Structures are given as C-alpha cells and as structure tokens.
Image (cartoon, rainbow, N blue to C red; front, side, top):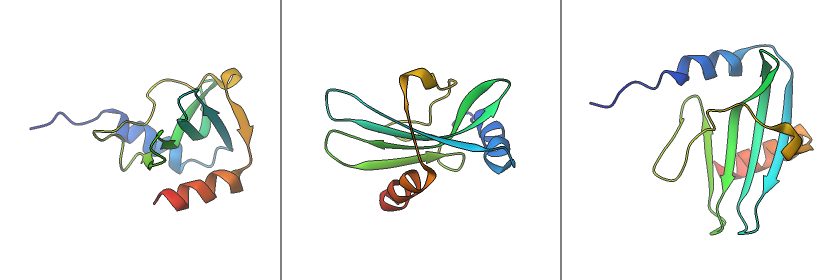
Length: 100
C-alpha cells in the first residue's frame, strides 16, 4: 500500500485559506512551461495549484487533490519567485481550465 502523502493536508489548508494569491510563469529552452498559483506562508510563496505544459504541449494540473502522477508533481519546495514572471490571475485560470 502506498504511503499517505503528508503534504496533502498542508497544501489543502493553504489552498482553502483566505490568504492573497499570486500567479507565476516560467519556461525552459526545451519548450516546457510551468504556471503556479501561490499563497504566502512563513514568508515564502508555496504553490497550491500548478499547471505543467510539456514539450509535447500536453498540460497537466496538480493541486492538493492530485499531488502527483507518473508525469510530474506539485512542487514541494517554496517558489523562488525571483526566477519567475508574475502573471495575472485570469491568465492562470484560463490555462488551468483548458488543462482540465
């Protein structure tokens, strides 16, 4: 039997909080793209939702209800926001919905 993922209750708590959200984007030279919705906790930005778009253009969604699969996972480290470009919430939501 698989071990329970101890991140689930923590990510769910952050996701359901009233804390302000910020949205981020980054890409690499191979054509992969990552979008994040973050909530600040303990002075750091933690991803509560993430969309990963592979070089094959397939989009995958990760959040507390789907933390990982064979293709990837919701990042388990605080976001290094200085390496990311901030985007607006509507842009994130449109990609999130399209990836569903």
